[in-house]
Image (tube, rainbow, N blue to C red; front, side, top):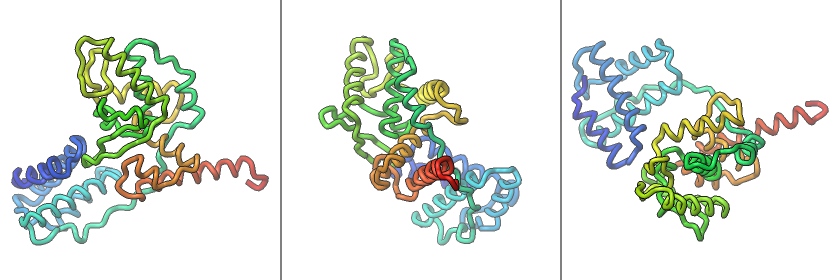
Length: 298
């Protein structure tokens, strides 16, 4: 197995310099641990500078034999690339063993999203209830759909991040990058009302986060995931019902209504336009469907 300090130095880099999320860091760590455990079992003790492309290809072949998806294998390859690149920059390696490692092709998969008629039903026909959980659930769904923010960004949203006069939210995204997202006056007023109600509802509560549960505590990821799944189940039959589906829905609906792709990129906090362009495919599919239904030769 690789020296734990060799892996830990890379993990510290991701944590303190890149400021990646806990979930992302855990994925990198697990990928590296899996590779080096495999390497030791198959080839014995191997120094970092003795790891070569043949060992890596052998590991990737074993992943394929275990029916790991191309997407998963690509993520693991990316983890190794970043790891070896880091140790070259750190002076621990002269060259990377990843030079001749190719990534498997991934079939294009369009992001799933909720149809507009179903989001209309969600916000106009569903009774969330007037207790604290109902108020929180309703606001969570509105924030996700109107801003497209990530789950981690939502639960870390602070009261000081709300600009009520300017109708905007300041969001702390991946890599600790800040972005400002415009919101409707309705959502701005809903946020202000929720914050005021929170002070009346609880004698003690977590002061920084906007959203809290029935005990006045900051929301946690599983809580939000389950509430989104529950509410989406009331209006849609798509197989996956998660906060990220609402992010896809936000972007797709903006695209369908003619929003500029660069603007959507900035709203989502994407590092490159390539990550945003997939939403144009959803629009094209919608056009094809409309053409097929309406055109005489469709």
